[in-house]
Length: 200
Image (cartoon, rainbow, N blue to C red; front, side, top):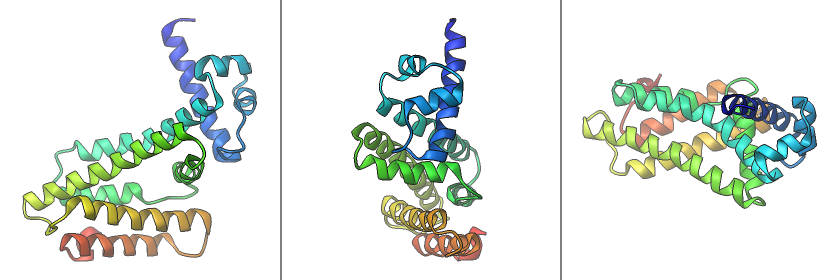
């Protein structure tokens, strides 16, 4: 197998693993389930991942990296801080039956028992907060935002979004996406010295 073919096979295995995990959950996914869904031998799965924990951690990272790639596009853009913040808040919000949010929630829960997954989820989670804090800092520097603690504001805004997204994902119909969007705008506006309408 050429290096390129191996990379394509690995990408396909990770995509399949994400689909299986979204259906079965991290705790209930076996390497045999992924091999069967991918139409390959279990030995090939172990060839690429060595252990079940590594397979789960890499599948989690693969799913989350899709979200983080979209975040990178926003952060690296030449848009002003307020426009970046609006896009980041929309990106972070759960939509439909969000596979990435299901993976995040499942990943956080499984991280209590799986050290490799905990390290990975912590790194990815901190990356989001660091990027949000950087956008807030840029907005403070150019006078768009009034915020004495950009890092703290990023954590507080993220914590509200995390909590509301978990409620929406786990307890469907308790709150609506519209309510979540309004509350997140309200919290972000209070943190940054804005009017909520500026974040529409």
